[in-house]
Length: 341
Ligand code: UT7
Image 1 (spheres, rainbow, N blue to C red):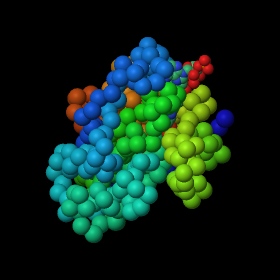
Image 2: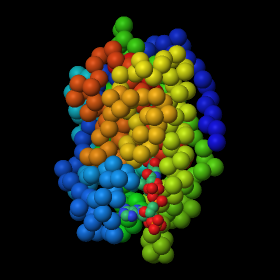
Image 3: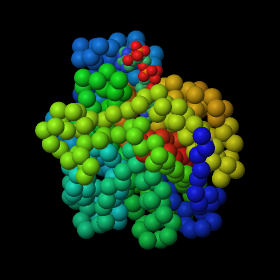
Image 4: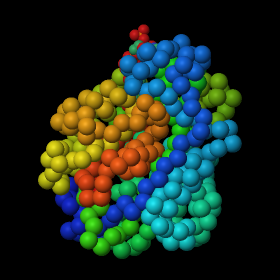
């Protein structure tokens, strides 16, 4: 299996002005669902979930709390850190596979709730890779001097599309949101490179077949559980390891940076065994790798965004440190980014 990358430019500062992340924020719903809680729902055990995935608990949003609500809370925290008010935001990108509704976009709902008037706002669908796709799109507008302040959010209420009777999937996912403010900062580096990739040949491995134009909602599609997420776990696992390693290596190569120079590796939080396999192959030490999967499970597009915020808040990342984000998701999609914090 080979993963190819288009547009293999090296450091972005040579082609435009640099783009920094000036603020990060995250939010997870209050309700904690532990592995013990899931033992009461499906035929599973804390031991199986812990050893096969590394997940101990996850957050589940309230019935009246939607993806846009999680997104807004994360965004407000990122804006506070960046010292940015709603009227300064010039573009809003929300990466999600669980929009509040098919349309209008969750980004437009976020714009309304934040009070950011009349700025372009759109959703981006790259599943678990969405936040890195969002960083790349956002930074293109900063680099080209089109916008000065861009809000990128990864947000999911994935509990809404999980079949809570299917032990193969329901133990894996959780709800949450993470956000970043992108701006140009004088004498700062920021995003050194972003790698993105996708392979639509493997679209069937991880999907929600119902609810789109192919299978609009009918009594039959609901009865056939087509509005729930489906995954071929084993194949997805194998592809995840290979694609994440390829993306991370490509990002490091473009920047001519050795893995030993990376202060913190932030991988997509889907499975501890995937994280360990990727870290091993990249030659990263356990001390370099940030993991919060045990607390939140797989939050899809929010995953690395929440982890980045927590890594910064906990002091694991200091200004000037080099960090590596690496993601993988349905599509299949993948991506990686080297950032000088
Ligand atoms: O974010 C997008 C990317 N997502 C991923 O990267 C997820 C990738 N896949 C995975 O993380 C793993 O494949 C899983 C965690 C989903 C599954 O782990 P696995 O080691 O591949 O297990 P398996 O699917 O091969 O299942 C092994 C056994 C099966 O039983 P049999 O057929 O051997 O009797 C399953 O039915 O484990 C069973 N099983 C469970 N048992 C207890 C599956 N789920 C559960 C469960 N509790 N929750």
